[in-house]
Structure formats: C-alpha cells, structure tokens
Image (tube, rainbow, N blue to C red; front, side, top):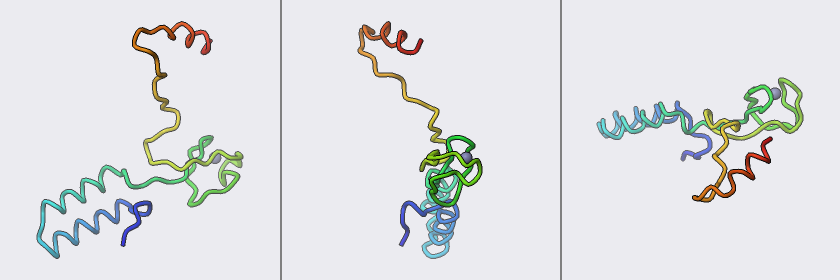
Amino acid sequence: MIDAGEATRRTFDLLAELERREKGDERRAAEWHEKANTGEAEPRWYCDACNHTPPQWTPHCPACRSFDTLEWRAPGAAAEILPPPALPADGTLAAASVGKIA
Ligand SMILES: [Zn+2]
C-alpha cells in the first residue's frame, strides 16, 4: 500500500513497470511515468532561509541554524510566489493597497 506522502518518482516508475509487466498495459504505464516526471508527489521539508532540505523537521535548520524556518512543501511550490492581492472588480482598494506597500 502506498501512502500518498511517501510516493516518489521511483515509486511511480516502479508502478509503471509493474503495470507493463503484469498487465501489458502501456497506457497505464505511461500515466504512471507522467506522474513520476511531474515530480508532484515529492513534498519535503525546505528551509526558507537557505533552501536546505533536511530529512525531517527540526526547530533549527541543520544547515544554517535558523530557527523555525523549515516548511513542508512540494518542490517548485516556492513560498515567495505569493498570490495576487484580492481586489474588488472596480479597483476601489487599489490606492489603499499601494499605500500599505509603501
Ligand atoms: Zn537553513
């Protein structure tokens, strides 16, 4: 049984191989390879300060010793990519938002 949090590219590659050998199902095998190549199934701990990826959470980053900087996320889901601010369609809050940023 595969726990979603533990599935890795290797897991998906093995599932693809299993699908191919056991059932001869090339289409399903290709789907597993697709999942493997997107790498979407490999969340891990990231240090916000130095991008180190320790195997487990610790209060201090093992690499840079920063406190409380480890965050569980998928590769590519960078924390610095912020969603755009929610503004009303008529833009009435735009001036207020600019004021906050400055
Ligand atoms: Zn660090």
